Length: 427
Image 1 (cartoon, rainbow, N blue to C red):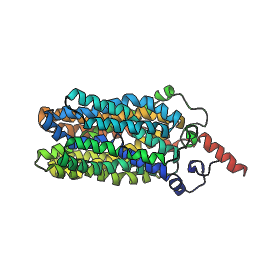
Image 2: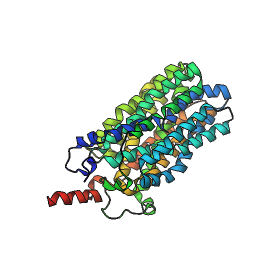
Image 3: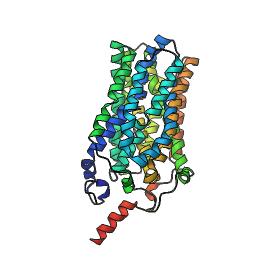
Image 4: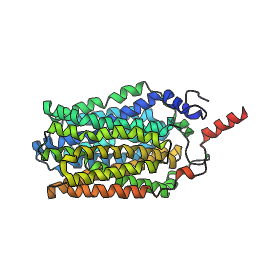
């Protein structure tokens, strides 16, 4: 047995998982923040400058998030099996530079809405290996007893991106224009590639060493798993939650600018989303290692719905609190999606099936901002969009609560655990 691999040491302290696998966790955390998800945080500061330069509506500009997410949703079912077959390192080594190249191409963009949207779509396709699916798989393969905490730490990368990227992009735009914002993001996208070179990963064949609720026998086929109630409950829940939590994120800055707030200050206020995410994710991860995960996360989603209502009733004065609550809810979302998927999906199929669930999340998170943008263009208000977001947060939470409890199932172990227990008893 490989003593370096803390996953297989069932008797080892949980702390040893963090110590043995800190390089993988560092790579996943930085990669999650500077990969494809960073595009969502940079679009907000770009809306007003691009609206002024090209004369596009806000709904048209936020179509970029839909195109990139649809591009990723199309590519995810292909990259998921590749992750299962070839491993995280090979997939990330190809996708990271391709993602940086497509973002750089956006900095050279010369005009035309159709070309702009096509470039974003290509970014989603070529950057698919920089999505949370890749980084979640890296963490799930390496962590068992502290999987929730590890996923929470990984997801703080997204929170730190939400905290730091909006004001950074706003400052870059103010000093050098919107093209420099894309150039800066392209350079940042290469940072995880450096960490990847110094990170050791398991071979794909060792991916079955994680603890799940599946039998120790052969994995069910992907088609069989797609027909289960658990899969569709996860997919529908996170589609609704993705729509709700992401619908207002790119609109926070223009909404505050409309009320007379300075663009740089508006970006600072919107970064409270990142504050909520950074605070919420490690706490959530620590809690779901100890308590039933859904019961921990649902109050966070309800709090985010309350934030939307406060913004609807109280206006921009509640923007910091709303951003904080949405950030906490967003902090719960990615962690919970990864964690629950690892509990209901056989480890040998994790990459393939989680890619479908993440695709549903991406589509919802892309449609939400576009609908909010077009609703603003037609009504000159975000009120309807806020009502929809609050309603979807509540309905998504209700759907999620219908999942059968994984912690009440009979404990069953995966092959690597069975071998470890046998060796332990033979001693």
